[in-house]
Every structure is written in C-alpha cells, then in structure tokens.
Image (cartoon, rainbow over all chains, first blue to last red; front, top):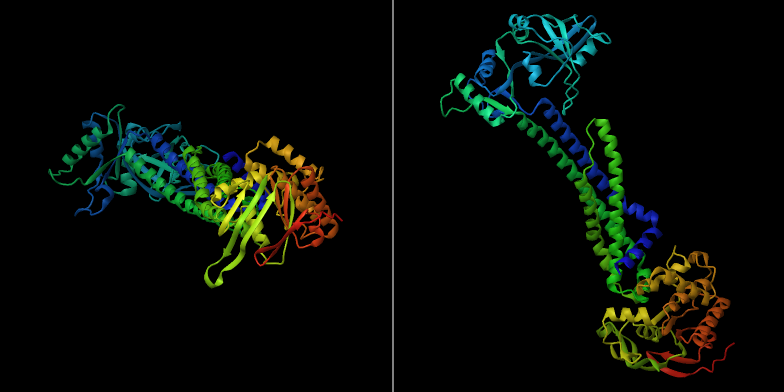
Length: 402
Length: 232
C-alpha cells in the first residue's frame, strides 16, 4: 500500500512540477543554509586546530596577571625579566626550550618602502618553540644575543613588502630609533585562524629590543615548549611553583601570573568558532522551519484546490487513511526532495566558500543526514494538518465543490 | 439476484426547524442486469437516493441492502472498500484529473485496488477500447471533447469490473449528438457486458434508453414502471 501511495504522490508532484518546485524552495534554502554554515564553521574550527597543532601542542605560554584578568590585584602585573626565562630553562628539567618574548608594532623603512609590522625581541629558542624554520641566512649568534646587536630575522611578508624581488639579506632596515641588518629570512607559515599573517614579523635579539624599543628590562611573555612524553599538567605545575617562588608569593596568595597550555588556547579559540557555527546554524535552522510553514501553506492551498479530486478519489474507493497518506507522503516526498537538493546546493556552496575563505573543506556527514531527516520530519509535521483536512472531506460535498 | 434493495429509506439533513427531509420512505428493488433511469424535479431526492446507493451517504433510517448485505451498519472504511470493488461512478462533471492522460485516469481505481502496474495498464487499455477510445491513451482531458471525456470517465468506472455503474446526469454537460453516443455506450455495457446501470437524468429522451423508469417527487417514489425500451 505504501508503495502505491508513493506512486500516487509522485504522480501528483510531477503533475505540478512548477508548484512543487516553489513549494520546496524554502526547504532547499533552509537545508542549504544550515549545511553550508556548519560545514564552513567546522572547517574554520579545524583550521584553528591545525594551526595550533602546527605550533606544537606541547607549548606553554606564561603571562603576568591573573587568568582572564578580572579583578586585578593592587600593583597590577609584575612583569617578567629575562632571568625568569633563564630560571625556567635551568630549574625545570621537563622543558625543551624557553623563549622570552616581547613585541610591539613598528614601522620598518627600507629605501622608499615602508611597512608596519610586529617587532619581537626574543632568543633563538623562539624559533624552536613556535616551530619556525629558517629559509635563508642564519639565526642570531651568542655574541649578538649577549650584546644586543642590531640584527634581525624577518618573515616572508616583510621581505616582500620592503625588498620586492630581492632577498634583502645583509640590507639594513630602519625603524624609528634604530636600524638592523637582515641576517635571516624565515620560511612561509601562512595565516592564523583569525586572519593574522604569521609572516608579517621581525625578530631581534631580546636585548636589542629592550634597549632600542621598550627601553626597560621587562619580558612580556615567556613561551615554553615541553619535552616529548612529559604531561603538560606536570610541567605547568612545576613552572607555576617556580614562578610563585621567584615572585615571592606566600601560600594562600593567588597566582599573579598565568601558565596557559596551548590546548587551552586551542579550546578557547575553537570554542569561539564552534559557538559561531552553532549560532549561524540555528539562524539557518529557523529558515528551515519557515520553509516548513511554506510547505504547509502550499499543501493547504492544494487541498482546497483539489477538493473535487479528493472527492473523486473517495468516490472511487480511496479510504480516509489513503487520502491522508497520499497528502502526507506528498508533503514528505516534497520536503525530502527539498532536503536532497538543499544538500547538493550546500556541497557546491561550501566547496566554493571554503576555497574563497581558505578554510579546509570536509564533508560533514552528520549535519547532512540531520538536515535531511529534519526536512523529512518537517514534511510530516506541516503536512499533517492539510492531509487530515483532505481525508475528512465529505465526498459528496467535495465533488460539488467549485 | 437482487442487487440493490431500499427498505423504507429516509434521509434528513439538518435538525429542528431547518431540517430538510430529502427522502421520506423509499422502497426500491433493482435486479442484477437492469438499466434504470431515475427522473424527477430538482430537490425531489433523486441525487440523495443515488448517493446512498453509491455508499457515499448513509440513510437516516431504513435499510439499504447491497447484494443482501446491510450497508447502513458499515463503517466509512468498509463503504470505501465496497465502492472500490463493486461500484462505478459516472458524474455530470466528468471529474477527470487534469494534466493526467486518459490511460492514467482510467488506471486510478486500480491503483487503489493495489494491482501491479503492468496489469493496471493492460486493463485500462482494454476499458478504453470498450468505450471506443483506443489510440487516445496519451491525451490529457483538455485535449478531448466533452463526449470523449465522459467516455474516459465511463472507462474509469468500468475498469474495476463493477456490479453496477451509478451515473449522475451523465449527459448533463453534453450536446445531443454526444449525449446519444454516451447513452448508446451505456446500453452496450448493460446489454453486452451485463453491467447494471442506474442513471439520473433530466432529459426524457435519454431516459428512453433505460428499460425501467423511476420518478421521484418530494422525496418519494411516485412511479416505477418498465420503460418499454423504446430506443429512438
């Protein structure tokens, strides 16, 4: 019987192909929107995750101040010194590399070219911790680091903006208060999830930075990479203990610094994109619901329009249930079709959009199945009222209907 | 064998002051193989009578026996099945499905019977051949004349091999040439295929095709006599 009803419903849909198409348009758009949003959202999350993984998941970032900073204590954040980084490197056995990091945006000038970029004072360990490789030239040597020599290692973006087609090695870049010689160029690393160009970057020895840029002995953050196989929690608590000691905190005092795990940062960032995905997905889901109302509307019109036909079907021996099923199946088949077309549209749209937004594309089976089922369920829900209306018609009156 | 039997059937629409007594005690017996015409002025109850015969409506009181079985006590579902397997309808307004070709229109009742597509198709073709529309299978109702449309409708009523065809003013929308063609077709079905035909008509000329004439007035049968079958 179901097969029969499917056949009748299919015939009806084909008979009014234009109306059928307009009916499902709402569902098509709804499903396409939901699936596209979620696919792109997941892509963005995946990208964030990959980037953080490329930085190394075994990295800890130590910053002055309490976690997420509400209610700062008096005297605010006592800054770190280079000695803090050295102490971590010396006393914590589980760390692989420790890099003190301070940075500031400055305008670099070469000839008649200028470019505002992030200038970072650090040590060679920075390149280890952040997983960055040298493409040409060399890193800082011991003397340069100790004396705060005027040398720098630059990212690809800075090189392109200042030197164009030449490689710039050995050239002098001028900042407001000092100049430095380019000794090395880093390999391209690309953008972060938030669209920050990681190659738009100049590194100088920490001492050089402190003397020429910040004018003090402070270190803004300390980045630490942990040896393989050591649990991050262990390293985290070891470092925290050492820092409490060095900052002379008494037992019971709150930490006035934060040791953050890359995984936590990753969680923070991915939770943001996930939240956005959910939000956009829900907005799109509302449009799917509106599509369902559209189906109900058209089905109601259809029942009125086809009153005589329903009367005839009842007269030639269709049972109430069969008429109910016919209209219900018509609604479900229509909306399921809408779902399928929506999914196809979504695949094309998300392929295009992910390419445009440079996010990885991955077919999201779950959301596709969910959206499809949801569209079918919408057919059942919004098709039921019109279908019942049709089934309850009195055949005599229905046949007389003008 | 008695096919249709009404035993003091009444039908009242509405209640109280507004009540309309459409049938006021009707007794009719129709044997298998008869060709009956029902005539009467508007509102005389002849349509109500046909609807009750066709199980589209139920009597308020009295009994309706179809092949000896009391229909009055049947559920809506059972009556639907009775219509599906035993009754054929022909209406004044044809009631064909638009944008659906003749063959598919004729197939429709067989779909509800659950026949496989192949058998459905061959039986629908057969029925169309009986009504003289071989070669018109793929035409939509809009491409057919009124007479042809009514013939498709008759083929649809015929395709289930019903015991009786109930026709409600089958020639009401047709000109006289087409009307006579339809009446001849019904006569052929009655005489050669043994199908009982009960037909409502306003046109005395068309009533002449039937072999028995029942006249209604004010919800009652006022005359019921052989028609002599004076075919014009």
